[in-house]
Figure 1 (cartoon, rainbow, N blue to C red):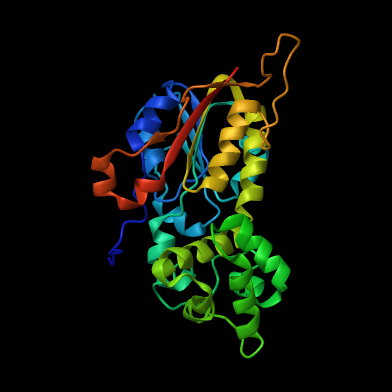
Figure 2: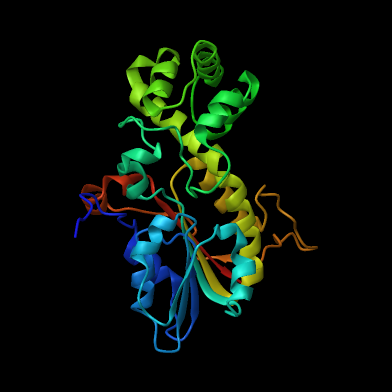
Length: 304
């Protein structure tokens, strides 16, 4: 049987995440980002015969990694619908929820999905291949101002307007439909001293927009309060400042904006108790083994 040269995914901060979830052997757990199944398998190892794990992934490629165990349920869906599916599978409330927001190695290393500028491929970037909107359609249809706003929000670029203008200029002559065409179009607008870094940021912004990743994260975080048991834990691994800020705000104040609401005595009203005061980051040894773990930040909170 043919096997992939690359692993589907290597989970970051694996042991730290499992430890901080404080897993109860008989509990119900949810991994909303199944991917290669690394975190899910580690959770399963902690469960007794009475335990249960539901794992979500909107990319059907991940189905091949499913765990053959009657305690395990693979849910082919976006994690923003966690509340609906826990009800559908009669799972009750969860003792713990894990979200690893990193993109799987599989998506970057599979050249035909359009996630990476390193290989030429159709400009797709959809996590769910049945989703209606592709990255190519965004590049073709967004006006200059909307492209600029997307790049400003989701890419840490010095001159997002210049990049947006470069895209509009090139597409007026010929459609931009592949990763190499996009790279060539924006390259003149990037800082030549850090062109590769900025190009990665352009691709990141386009991927986030294509998959509505921030909308998904907001809906998921808001639902987590309703689907966790009191004392249940939420563990989230983030990889860039935008999503990390959302998670930090939510765990600190109970809302995405980070707006503090205080009681009569000045205490911040929040449904969460922080388990990690500061984010847990990968050790030098882990970064050496898995360089992609360098940007990972793990935050954990307990529902009170």
